[in-house]
Length: 342
Image (cartoon, rainbow, N blue to C red; front, top):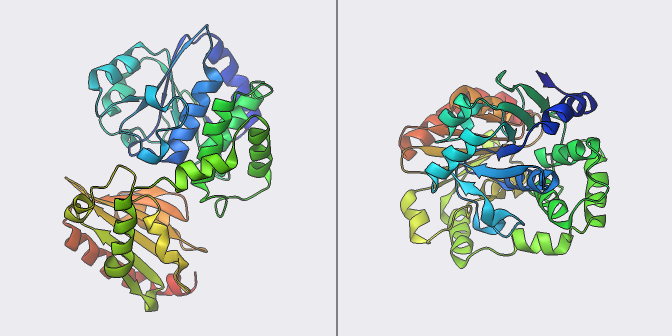
């Protein structure tokens, strides 16, 4: 049962939580700030002497987010396959955060599919799969982290919210809104942020830890992107950046170092659609961003096995990097009118 009514969701969640003694919180592959912030935030909210709570991620945390309270204790499926399988097998409740399709947990899908535990969803992406015993899906929310706070508030657990929980949830909201520059449809996130700061979240320290702690290699790779790898198509109001595996290796990049690169071309006047192509071992990863009414998620879903939000989406391709780019450029021709009117 998927709900958009937060109060009703909490009402149905309370008896489930009351009988759960071993909870697994899991999020999506290549976890971003919202995935990690919401998961660790909920971990701190729910942890007590009466229940065991584990956070499980398919992939390693980016360097710039590992400092988050509880980050060192996250079970990483990529590195700890046996431990990850054990966590899922022993859980009596699995809470899925920031994704709504089971195939988003690379390498952990079998365990998540076969678990006998109740699967609970808290997410803000559109079109959730009907595979959850109970779900909260609110696409108008700024982030899953904001929804985690809303649920915690409904459970009566925000009155004495810990600094650790506040820090994680604040980080999730901040990163998923580009430091509060997009994805906010009401004043609610700012009210939540005020409460988080009152609970101990230090906004300057969080911002510096996330945005001012990158490696020299990342800065040089960003320079390469802007100088040599950015292609601008003014007629189509589109720009894209592509990075080969060799280029990434050349700069000894850390996990998460390409985060945010897709947004760089949006600073160019007139550009409404940007894509970052990153070459991986077995596929090309696409990150898509748009402005206005051009639906990046629909484009990703239709052509690159992806999805997401209207203005922020992801996709993938099993073709070579050059073939993927050529396909992308050809597809754009059919969207000229939409892009011009975006």
